[in-house]
Length: 405
Image (cartoon, rainbow, N blue to C red; front, side):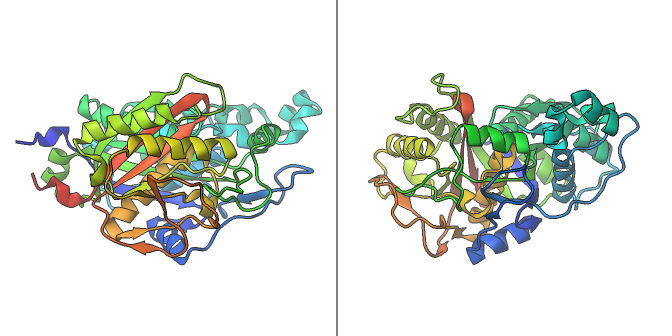
């Protein structure tokens, strides 16, 4: 008999991305196969490249002791969207946990002028600017906005952060640390981030081409996504609409290099294996992988190698696509946005193709989804995330029908 207190389900999803606010806007853009990527404007003097910004954000009145950065406000919009149908006056809602990821935090509030005269820069804007620098402010801002007083946790492990926040949130529920957890990630476009990736020679000036033999690098986007997690027992008790089941998750580290992935993809392959073990599923049970797929020469080949290892013995090649081809790499929020997309694939029976993939990496284990949207049942989908420093996180989602037990 399945212990319903040990089954984690998703009962809310909130998203703000370059596609707009809400899952409907995101899904419509993916179904239309239209990219949000465009030539960058006003990132910093002299920058030339391609990005995917979010439009105007609502203003939030600052708290008595702090201001909200753009990363904070993105997170607040996504969290508000995620709980739009919840009764926020219930005591159990206020006791919820929050796990939010970010790599930028409030650095988006600093402009390049600080380099000329830091003291003068602070005098002009006031030290209140500094209150939003910490990545921990993103989670705290969500708590302030929704009046949630449960345990709050910040995650910052580079580009796997958003997915890892969801995994940590699920573990909190299994530990009984909170009745419900809001988990996800948020990152804003930031000149310091852009200059860092420029120094690493990781950016493509044109729209990126994940998994293409002629790929040249990534593009940066911004956004936030929040998943509401709770146990199946609690969700059923309150009559919640169950969007998906988080069947398995895992986190590993390559322990290999500060920025480069391990070339054979061993760490990610191990992470995939552990997530499947937790989900008690086999390689043929997974219908789709939403890949990390950045478009960099190093990441994409390592990731393809990981799928070769992880899905060895599968009857048919595993369908894989990268939705970063639509809105770029959203850094600390990428894993949470892509988790939402994996759930969308399950619920809609639509696998979104990688854009601009004309000459894919050769892989006998992978069925690269490109061209048209592929319509087929997806009972289980995987979201894979990889970050600098070797961080790997894999999330396995299944349709709500798998809660029948």
